[in-house]
Image 1 (cartoon, rainbow, N blue to C red):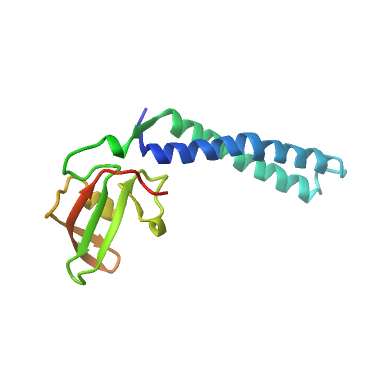
Image 2: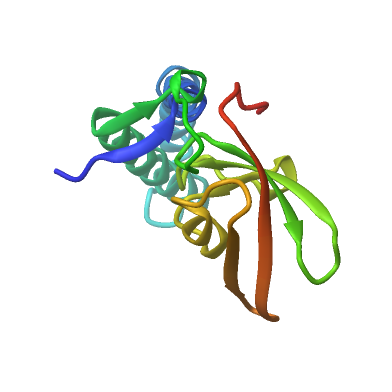
Length: 161
């Protein structure tokens, strides 16, 4: 089976979501289905059909999370060292065209949140950065054209989520 790389923080986040689905959402939807059954004919009971659809979504997400967590390859960024960019690295970049500085942490696909500065290693910029070191340039094929970034700093520290 294919391993699923993620930071320790991403593993905690997915574990918390799984726990919530199993302990809160699943019991709630079961209660809603039981209540909807009591409203009569199931063929014309929209409340029942909506609850069953929601149950299917919840069970599917639980199965997906269990699968990912069982195949997780957990990376603790604070234990990494070196100067090469890998999963868990926090990188400071300078856009070569605008001189604008940005800071990103490279995380697994399920952890990405651009507003928090968390980018996936499978994103175009994430793929371009992997393996680079301080002083290297990374060329990213972005929707608006190619962008060039200079790697200013590579750190391995706790990721603020």
